[in-house]
Image 1 (tube, rainbow, N blue to C red):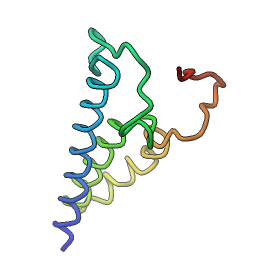
Image 2 (image 1 turned 180 degrees about the horizontal axis):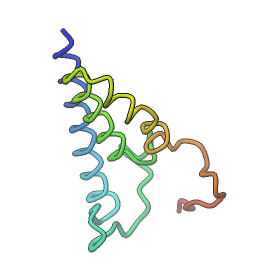
Image 3 (image 1 turned 90 degrees about the vertical axis):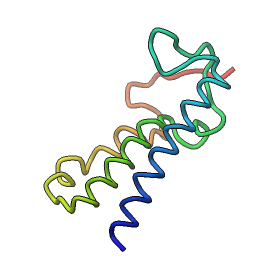
Length: 101
């Protein structure tokens, strides 16, 4: 049962990464690659619910691997990463941000 849950977390993470990349291409007219960045700020699709959906996808996939390997050490090392890197629904601490429009 634990293996199914771990696979579900990893799979959900990979699907979220794929969706975020497609949203950047379709809605932002660009890619995550700095050589071809999005031309527009994307605030729809997966970016409507999370400021950094690709980071959240990476974190979910990594958490799935941690659960699959049953490694408490890896969980302790990566435990504080998800809220700091992906959740981003509150204003940034430095007080500036993108203006939608």
